[in-house]
Amino acid sequence: MLQLCYSWPVPVDKVRNEAKLLAQTTIIRIEKHTDQFKVSPNVVFSGLELIPDSSSDKALDSLGSVEENLGIFQEIVSSLPVDNVDQILADIINLQTIIRSLAVSIRCAPLKSRNTDHLENFLKNNSTFRFTIGNVALDRLQKYLLKLIRNLDQLKKC
Image 1 (spheres, helix red, strand yellow):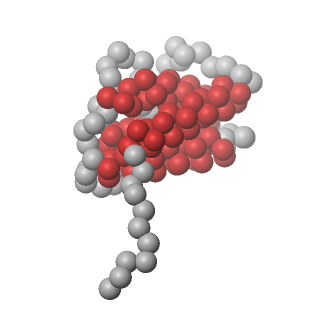
Image 2 (image 1 turned 90 degrees about the horizontal axis):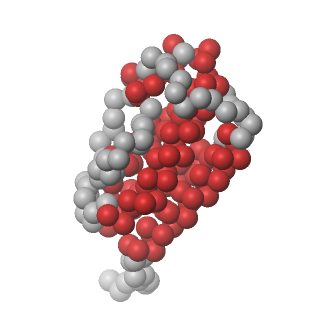
């Protein structure tokens, strides 16, 4: 059978640049959103450890951990009734797709679905504090994306 079309794979560097650009765009959107509601970064709240925190100097681990953390942020942002986060949520989903394609390009196995029961329970039990949780999550997402931009070129393992 004759092949009707053929395309060259997209270079990995181009995909990484797309991921960095999308991360930077999302950071700007988060900044615009959070300028209205500032929450102290020192807020103490039981269960916040479920939200990925990139404040340590430790580099990002792997493409799989990035995809997983973006999934956590996606679940948190999508569950919060906070206005004007639809585009941020779409950016997270698109960035997750780009990271997944990077993982495929270095022959990583698909990420296994994670257990989100703890996170779901935390969000359900603390729905009264949705604005605080939402702002903490967006603040941490912003910092995580900055770290992703700085470290994406070094991420070469699954």
